[in-house]
Image (cartoon, one colour):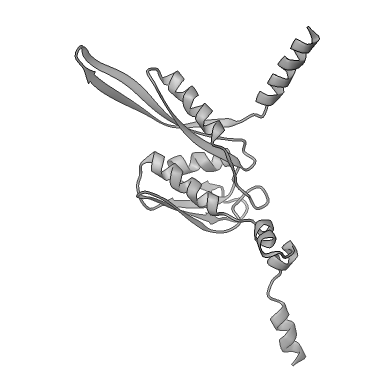
Length: 187
């Protein structure tokens, strides 16, 4: 009995990481068959922990709740980590592309909020970004907008990642250009 309880507790803990999810789009699709039409539903869901992890998924089924459940499961499997500055905004400006979808995302000062449209807003809210300015300058298709947004977020690098790649310290990467001023003062 004790072993069974331990397994159940472990399973509960594994499922415990709370993910928030946002339904972005539902499509009703129909298939014409001999007896009439059969309807199905396609759902697009964005899932995140609001601490720097986000993923999206799509699911198709005969009923809406089942399509949403499938999309949520697919999104949880496709999670990715995005480095955030101060846990609230991006480290630098980014451009993302997917097909005809093109998005531009810019860092923003504290208090700006999320200035982004539709599907992009869902991604930023699930990611945990609080201040960002974003613009979609391409396809308005929600699937392509989300893919383009995630493409741009994959390109984002933090100072720690840059320092590690260059074999330097983070302080060397973040240092301002005060060295040329000091040399000019000596001359």
